[in-house]
Length: 199
Picture 1: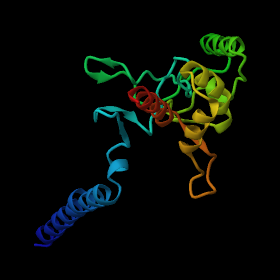
Picture 2 (picture 1 turned 60 degrees about the horizontal axis):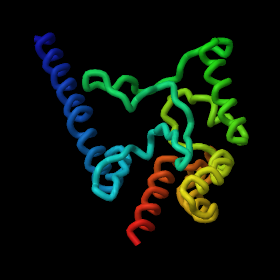
Picture 3 (picture 1 turned 120 degrees about the vertical axis):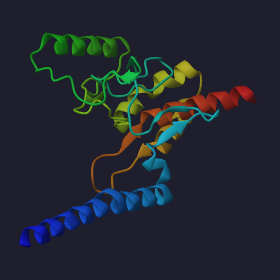
Picture 4 (picture 1 turned 180 degrees about the vertical axis):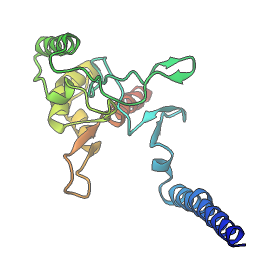
């Protein structure tokens, strides 16, 4: 009899925990997220003027043209797909400091900066642990300002105003450092060019 009672109690506890952990808690989190934090809960997706998604404000993208601000390099090629599945999700290169592949890549980056007469800021040369950082420092963005303004044939102060607008402040005012969201800034510049051409 005691075994039946204990087994029944155990089953009830398992069912109760399943109800709380698998139904009630996720439902509360989903409801709160979709009600109060919908854009963030859905991935902070940025859409163009046609309503098409162009990326997430939380994930960095590679920009190579002169008219764009360049973000932090990544060892992850998440933009490409292999049979419909992402090639990479997150992660660093895992190359040691003495690895020839890493040294050659850094050397190539330094040569590009030397040709452009730009200061080689660390976040524009070294990849991060996640490989997905969407921000660079204000100094690294300002260092590219003249190139971007020249490539778009606009005044540097027009670019600078957008740079300030898309600079995220410290978290809670004390954690981390301010950073410029490259995807938001580059899209804002494209939108500004589009509006100028329309007028």
